[in-house]
Image 1 (tube, rainbow over the protein chains, first blue to last red):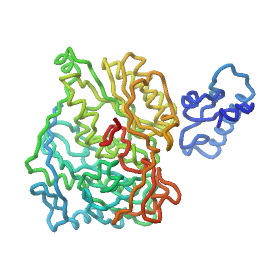
Image 2: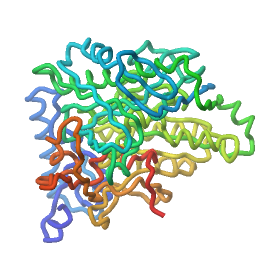
Image 3: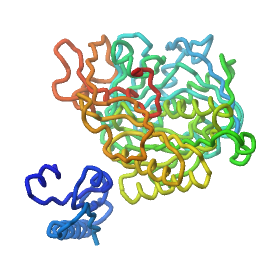
Image 4: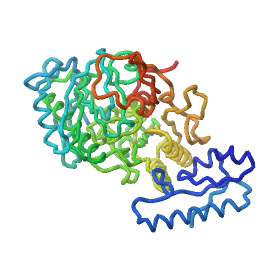
Length: 78
Length: 426
């Protein structure tokens, strides 16, 4: 899906846990997620902490979307 | 570590009012087994049944399959750290009821259990159509969580296998084999000319009831470590898996791991089976990196010339597999990987979710997406309620004539990644 959308000229950020697979399939902008069963949250944390995680991932994804890349790039969540 | 395994061939299984094992016939005391199972207050009811090779019987949804074994001599008991105290097993003598199996079924995670057909096309794809099976169908008490249900069912299956195994304690085996795993230096001195080959076994540990236990330890909480292959033959590794049936390792698979058996067969002749490493398949990327780093570290530390890596499951564990392969190759040790494929029903899609050029020697258990039609069988043990939802099933796949259309994925052991299969393509 990432590649087809990009083929249509729209840049895509792939948020995913297993970034090596994302690299293998050819995504250009990659943001690491939390874990496979819960990519955008963590049931061990409080709702408030989870919200912060989601905010950070989203901010990183938006930053990635607005960054020019020359090669496949992983944007680490700070 | 030296283990003698006495194989007692089982040629029939029957219910009886007295449990015994005579002339290869396993007599099961149904009331005694039922009472033992119901000691666990989490289980409300259990139905015991027998399924023999060739009978028109379908068992589903299958959770685990376990081979009855008993420790006759040497330290520890079968299934250490789970049914008995933690004590190192893998030496002394163990008796095996070869040809018998305990099969557990229940609606824990209905869609992630399997199908065993005792006859017809489906029987070709599962090794458990050839065993004499004592099947237990469990109903939990109301309100039991899925995790507790899985735990209760897992322990009940192991207890049943242990109780049946006990009947073989005093029986003279049909065949006795000796498996010896030498300490590293002794092995190197004894076989200086032979290549040092190791086995890296990846164990399913994704959580959410995709778990494997080693001496009772949940493998997702362990770092990559070493084990003697003889310990595995005594039940040190057990399955707690509710996951796609075709390529999960049941406890039976662990007890009879063909990679271990074949390496022992070649040991001292064409190679030196120097070490066995067990690692996990966790759901955090950092865990995947750490565990595969550790695998490569151990391989380098043990100075292995070659390594066989077996995967369990599919999807994101493909990444663990490729990481293990890539990192072990990077320390200069050649690898062969054993996996299976999800290449689509026509077989033209990419087989694995991940890939690397260093994975240039691959053994496959087959394409799990391959569609097969299973004929209507006379008797169902368990329920057909899940055959459309089971992984590998799909909506309306139960045909009017009673046949079922499924992908191989739904059949227990069909594309097993230890190579525990009977079909091959040549």
